[in-house]
Amino acid sequence: MTVKVRFAPSPTGKIHIGNIRTAIFNWLFARHTGGKFLLRVEDTDKERSTQEAIDRLFECMKWLGLDYDGEVYYQSRHEKEHQRTIEKLITEEKAYVRTEGNETSGPVLFRIPFNLNNCEYVQLRGTVEQKIHPEIPLEMDYTGIKFAQISRKGKPIEFSGCIAGFKDLEVYDSAGQKVYALTDSDVSCIFNRAKTVRLEKCSKIVYTRREIIYKDLIKGKLSKPLDSIKDLVIARSDGSPVFHIANVCDDIEQGVTHIIRGDDHVENTYRHLMLFYAMDYNSPYYGHMPMIVNKQGKPYSKRDGDAFVGDFRIRGIMPEAMFNYLSLLGWAPGDDKEKMDKNEIVSKFTLDRVKSSSAQFDINKLLNMNALYMSDLDKETFLKLALEKAVSQGWFDEALKDKFRKAAELMQGRTKQISMVSDWKYFFFNDSPLFHDNQGDEAAVEDKLYTYDPKAVKKILKKTFNISGIKCVADKFRKTDVFTAENIERCIREAESELDIPEGKLNQPVRVSVTGKSGGADLIETLIIIGKENTVFRMEKIVKLFKD
Image: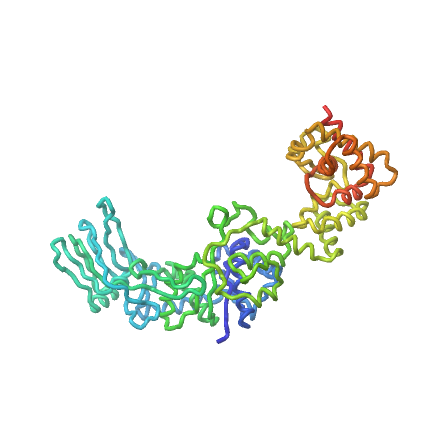
């Protein structure tokens, strides 16, 4: 059997990372097994499905290198086939039009089959006795069964379900006498609208419980009682097919063998298995992937930060890093290795190593992954990316090019995303809001300004002994003819010795006074790129601001 999987997004907006993670897992499974990865655009929502959204989908897949096999399958172009299937189901009494009053049209519902003796997905689970509320009549008609369960406080709780969930149904009155037994003949008459059943003052029902059971490729054995399922709408009142029937018809048409999708579709799968059975087709294998959640365990959304693929692309996440990280979000290769190229991931990917529990999205892990890929870039490629981003941010000019190259070489190993080039302004410019109004933590970063980290200001620069050390180092820098690594090191160590400060304790005050940050690349290399005049200028500014 040739494996055929499909990615079937609805192009109604931006591509969520959860959707593209589904595409990645399907692509990996197809490539690992030597199968086919099909792309199906489920564009039947005519109001929300736009060409712009479809183009965005293709762009996103191309960016991540998710090539597909064959032509793109547009669901909207197969609506007539879906409608023919619906009409066939109605003709075979496997579906019905639900009408009310004098209406002649309404939505079409798929009827959960009553005769399931040969269905491999349905098993008997024994006899069930259930008390029902005597004040609410038990009713059965072509749309299903209705009665009232009893709450803990004795109040009625209305219930409705498919008749197929109540095999061998017997109804008893308050005296314990059987007043009705559902026969195959009754079922046929009810389904054909030739009979309705209404029973009052009933207190108990007894029936054989049946369950839909299947082995999920990721979650293992899953089951759902048939008595908790309702008949399923498959076409709207205007005749347009809905997701369920279109989805199953297209899976049959495309010959899909494995359906790998998010576990928010588990409930749909029970109903789809019944559709495949009613349509006399063997169903594909199903595997439901864990949801992507936030720190609170809730579905990850825009409220938690960037959630769409385009957001991450804009901020400078590399496609290789994005692919690598999302492939590990719910799957593990079986060792501690995380950074892997596509070929390695393909070779290791199996569904039995996909986790069944939710996968928590961690932006810091993604950024760390991206940093590894950024470090692997050759210097010229990284420089090109950094230059392009600086230009797009509007602060770069050609006069900075030589110094920018040096800064890029120094910062490549510390850059987690290319948009961070905006933080490099301290290499080039002396203008900081801190020097103007002493409120650098509140001033906006724009044009050629760079800001001081308010926490570093509070912790480092507002301490008198640190300011004394900064002044001493600045004086020594000013008197130094050649601003070399050796001379910079000597000046800082001499200042520490003269002020009786432990060796190395002035490094951070010097860094903060010059760069505005408490961390960064090697201090001495950083100062060399900034240059003697700019370094001394900033240090003296800081001393003047905080000496009192």
